[in-house]
Structure formats: C-alpha cells, structure tokens
Image (cartoon, rainbow, N blue to C red; front, side, top):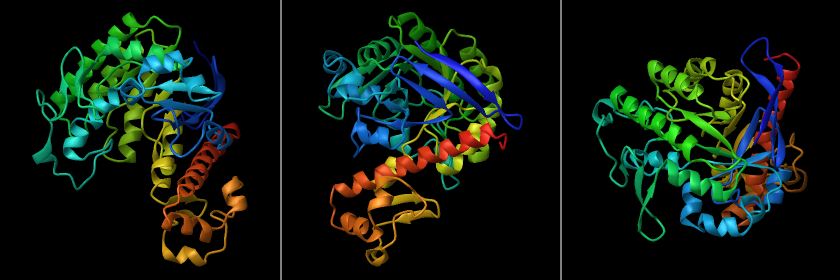
Length: 381
C-alpha cells in the first residue's frame, strides 16, 4: 500500500507539497512520472533514468501484456526486479489504449482539442464504434499489433495483469474519452468507467494501491458527476483522465471542476499531460503527480528543451556550435558534450544521440518540477 502526507499547502492556489511513500521508494510531490512504456524509459537504462532525477515511473499494462506477457514479468520477480528499477512504479490500466488504438487512431486526434479539426463533421456520437477495436459494456476487444490475435481487456483482466506486473500503484480500467465526443457519448463512456471502477475494486486481490479515474470529457456536469462518484469510492488515490478541454484554459477548468470533489488527503494524478508550459498550471490546480511522454518523444526527434527555449539539434547550423546544449544545465550531457557533436550524432543516425537528448530532456523536466516545489515552499505560487 501507500501512505500520502501533505507537508505544505499554498495560500495562493491549490498547489501543495507532499510525501508519497510506496513499498519501493519515497516520492516528493508534486512530481513528474517518467514514462517507461515497455518497462524502460526509451533510450535510457533504469540507472540513467534515476540519475535524471526521476523518482517514479509508469509502465503500460496493454503493451506489457502483449510482450513479454505478465507471467514472464511475474516469474522475474515483478517489474521492479525485471527492469532493475529502484524506486516507485505505476502501471496504467490499458484504458488509454481504448482511445489511442480506437478513435485516436481513426481521427488522428490527441488529448486536447485543436482548432483545425472540423468538429461538425467528425463529432463522435453515442453508439459509434472505432474501426479497429470494439467497446462493450463489459470491456474492450483489441487486435494485437504483435501477432494479430484478438484479445479482451476488461476490469477483471486489467486487475489480474497489473497484479502480476507488481507495480506499487495501479489504475482502474476505464475508457479514455476521445476529444471529439459529444455529450451523449461522453456520458455513456463515463458510466461504463464508473461501472468498471466498482468491478476493479471487487476483483483486486493484492495490496497494491489502486487509483480510480475521473472521466467526463470537457463537459462540466459530467466531470463533477464523475469526480463525486469516483471520489466516493474507496480508492487509494485518483487519476484524472480522458480529453482535457480545448486549450490550457480548458485543462485548468477541468481541474477546477474535479479537484474540489476529491478527498484532499489522497494523491491526485493527471494522466498524459505535462508539457513545460503546463506544469505550473496543473500543479497550481491541485495535481500531485503527472506523466508525460514529451521529454522522451521529442528527444528522439532531435528536440532538446533548454533554459533558453527549444533547440532542434539536427539543424546544420549546430555543426559549428561549440556551446554546451544548455550552458545553464548541470546534467552530464551539458557538462561534457557540445552542440556540434550532438548535431553530428543525430545527422549520422547514431543511437547515442537518442540517449543523450533523452537524458537531458528528462533531467530538465524533473528540474523544472523541483523548481516549482521550491516555489510552493517559499509561498510564491
């Protein structure tokens, strides 16, 4: 199980400092949860992820179920031993894949609304099904991208898989709502999520901490209803999932609707949001932990985040740049390597390039959160 203690509350916002104690490590909150989809932070070893100041990681239930399989992980002693991670671990429920492999794939949409989408033509209505998966009241049918076999994932299956994976914190199975949902679709989806939340509580047999997930899309009435329903259930913490509005203002609105209805003594996790410009907004909104693929995803595309802004290191001009990647950063990449060398590695398609930029970005993101913790401590936000 876990123990969560709030050590300081802001007088200016809902921001707070806390200590999240898990069986495998203590997490100072607020904290970024590094994404280790297939039991690894892409391009990094577990030791490097720790050196990049990561306190806690999240692995992906759906992908690990496909390969190597939860039985393999369990036989290795669980995820911590399997991936040699000495720290806290979460696993998601597989609910995000209901979106990403469903309507997300069909429409090419993400977790926030974009103006260029023609909502009138693409609105997702109640009863509509994605092309590649089938959503039922009992769970979801997927087709494996590994071998093409059909597989079913519902509350019972998700709990069994996550228990075998053995993370410290697991999530209830849910449907992550697509951005273009109309109110009727979002309501129906939310009600399934509530039903599945109850079933997850029933089927869970382990001592792992279980978080329930609030849904309701961008609709105020649904978000409040979901927060009240999930908040009344005996979960150890809460996730806030689904699509999160039409802008950063929309994300703030969702948090304003949801947070007041959740037990303040339990930790709150925001699923899949955490760009640099989002961090202070969501932390001031009352979020304790959040996961985001941006630092690793962008690194593999040659993008470094620095104190002076974004650097697209693959551009030719950096071949003659002898400055550190970020002169104000004290990570080992910035202390030992120059931009010209990193540019060369990317242009030569050397694998070390992914490692160096991923390490720097993850370190930079974790340092940013540490700075926000310090601001809360000083009463600045």
